[in-house]
Image (cartoon, rainbow, N blue to C red; front, top):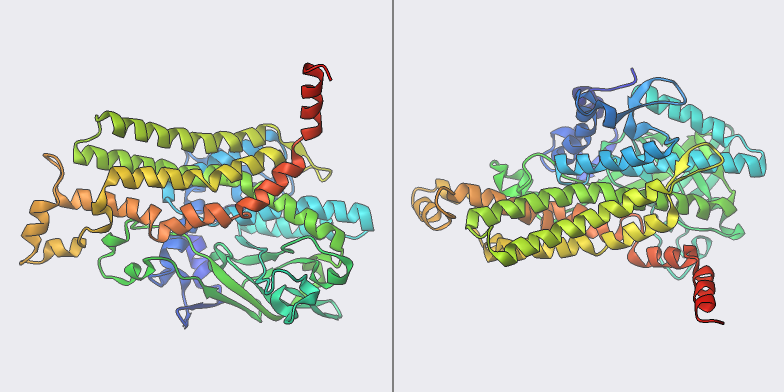
Length: 481
């Protein structure tokens, strides 16, 4: 089975038996809990799209490992076309779900580990790349979903991992046993962790020799003994507990993050992809960051498409769609959104082949793309709120329309232009609220700043990668120096 259906995925998640806690309570079935159901459905959509005839070319690929048709979310990219199609696929998913659909971090992680394990083997004579290739065959053949686990809790940021008062603040090897290792620590902000079959762990930063126990990369099933998922809170997530979910804005989908605790977890040797090779920790982190920073020019742009559409719809409902300043603001929203997409596609167009045969995006352009993403979604959201008006944050609930006493007032005074009833207006505004203020804002705004590294991380890389000396040389020549 190279392709799993949406229902097969949800069934596999229900039967996974991994340890998940939401608001202090253990959850038996992630897809059936009202808070975690929308993110599970967003993840399931990555399977649903691969089933659609008109989407198969974008959402599937041919594996170079198994020669099977596989979901593109499990594909190792081997040419420029693969890099481009990934970005186009992510944008389409953003349009379909208007949230973080949680699968691209795992995809970017797999491509990064694939390339770096090859380099490790060349440098140290290890056998990591073959192990990881076997792991990828398993993932692809069963259409499984791995979560990327990179960010550590970090404790005192001024201290290196081995100097921490509590050395568990960075995940590390605590014991070597026959046939494997034992690890302890926690990984934070793990996108889609509760919806994943496997977890792939890698370091969170460059390391020195004294920190070599922290230079570890591996994969284990999500239901491995000692692993606990602690679900992250989001703004307005309690609305999902209401009987009428209309006030959530996005009725079907959502994103999710979790803390993943590794409490003396045993990792078998065949699942270890780095063990103490500290010089390569930073290289793995940087390659993952480059892949993931370009990805944001796909998924965030797709969400931006939905927000622009909702904003245009509310302008029509208000009767302001032909007003010059409204048209100008929507044009600005489109310009900002397409600029993000252009940056991602430019990074793929200048992609290159790594020694492993896998392709990577241009690192400078990927960082430029991501730095723009730390800014432009906020500008797009500001314009959306400007056009939406103050009712965005002061309107009553849709339930108020059904109240026999106040319902007539709500229906009378919340109408838009002729032909636009109060319910239509409120539903559009709720979606804008969700993307710019509610659960959707976690994916679209906060994640745009901190996901794949904060703005300063991109500035550091841009400065490091830019050919300033060459530019200076051009300037000297042209002014006669």
